[in-house]
Image 1 (tube, rainbow, N blue to C red):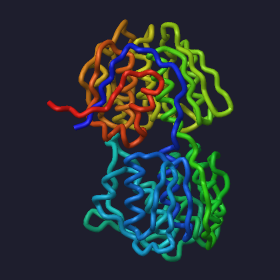
Image 2 (image 1 turned 180 degrees about the vertical axis):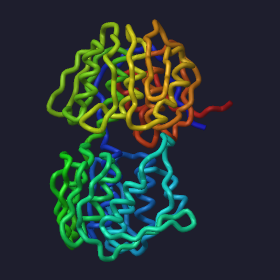
Image 3 (image 1 turned 90 degrees about the vertical axis):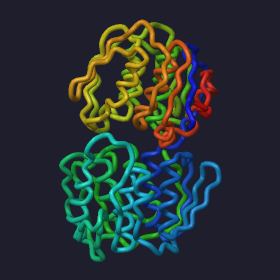
Image 4 (image 1 turned 180 degrees about the horizontal axis):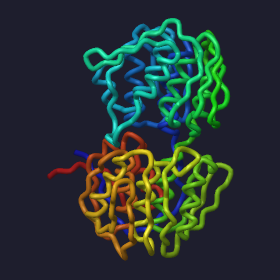
Length: 420
């Protein structure tokens, strides 16, 4: 079993580059089946979730090749519309294939998806949106069976701005007869990136980035090249690493405006943060200070995925910081592991109170989920001694070779095999 061995206490200095956004490339890979041609996707990170999406595409009959960070998908020979349980369980985001396959093939069969267990996620919102378009959906032997060869554009009013439901609505409605208007749509940058890709392959989508998205259904499909936007959560994690470890670091290949809530928080903690055109410089020399309450909300609010790394950065800050988690009920699963390192955290329902301690002690800890695992990496860099982090498959879902990236800026971190 692989583990990360982190010897904390050292400063981080240098430049670290951010790879493409996991939450952007996954729906774009799903959308590639709509091109009915060959598309080239650049800045595609080497993550287990991405590899799972590539397996799904190949299962569907698409030809997929990869060289470094470039993935080529030829969907002309797609000849299946079902995804088996084994592949669906590899990642939660696999449900995003539902709208794309339905739009391309007129029917889709998927089992319930897997991924991190962060509490209830409203898959019913995806299904309600597809039903509004005219799809007939049933559940058979644990599978979602969706049929809709004559989908018609309509108004889809999402009760909450769900990212996945917004994306599935965009994908399914792209080939509908007529126009679809999605209201209370998610506004995340990854939605905007999906719109960019869809329009490149011939779709007619506008409004992404706002709460109303309009899709004019059409019979489209053409080849295209697309570069995925940078991963704002990975960037936020590395900034939090610099905050707790101290030092001077530049994070490059980012879109600073996508990270404003995170950089504002780091500034409030006492870090010097200077955004550039496509980079962010951070200097952390002084003792960190506690924050006013950090409340997670849909974009452009504070992102739930950045909450665990920021919490870890606050573990030694002077004072007490309140975190209020409004997106996922089980987002605090990593708290027990942080306590093993000496963290002072009290949790009641959706609120976590983090009181800064003078020092953290290294400990063997276990990743509970993707972002919780990232929080353990952040905390380990600020701890005294050598920590060992296990269950790295969670971290590998969203961070490409995290140990190499952090080692490049001076972290004492290695991936090794646990021989015990």
